[in-house]
Length: 225
Image (cartoon, rainbow, N blue to C red):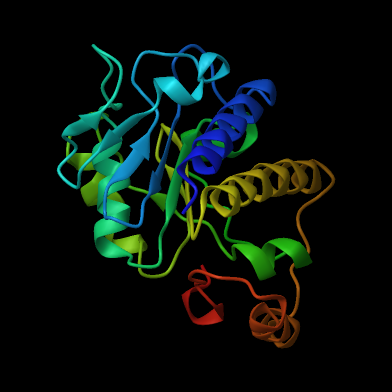
């Protein structure tokens, strides 16, 4: 693994999230698993617009800082990230943000579980709302744990959104797909309601994931709603 490239990708993702308005102030966090079982993570208390490679911290599986500038430490939300890595060996990166439309669904306690958009069905499937958890505690990782075997993307009740992937770009793309889907679903709702894809076509789309080389988990039709 090219650690410089990974750090640059993390910074690119942080800057894009800020530019898109998915985070404000010191919101959001990003982490990547390295080949030796340690992790790069964004530091706490810093706007994602200001993140640079030298500001990233390297931590172990307990969250202990192994490398980093003096005074820098990972976000208290790192507990949620580490739970993803613990429960999913295929996860290589975690992205947490507050994309406004998707987070609106999280605040309204409405899952994005209607299979309406072809691309969304293929890439992320239905997106649940996980139970409320107080930030910085183990309530959040405990809340997402039952969903991790089936979902790569989740809405966090009254909080924001979480996406995992084999690498940081994949996790970022899933967050992008989530927010666009939320906007489309909201517009469709205003126009009279979403019209769902038939079960037969949902199954066909899910089966195409292997053809497209889509990694990760998928809830499939049996977990739908």
